[in-house]
Image (cartoon, rainbow, N blue to C red):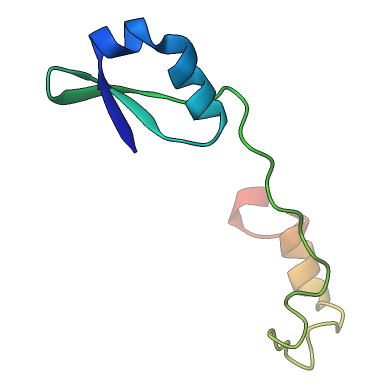
Length: 85
């Protein structure tokens, strides 16, 4: 992380912007106290998700795919319970 004073930031703003766009953290300080961070408007692209990365790492109960009982379905649909009355 780079820390520069306000005076340095005014003098080298174009260079600091280039460094931020290259991924560097730049903080501007008033005297020795950090007051702001320069950051790009667009977030860097996120890593692509890879299909199957959790394969074999999650165990589901044998009944996970079984249909829900009618009472549970009714609750999910808001058909019964104190709120629906």
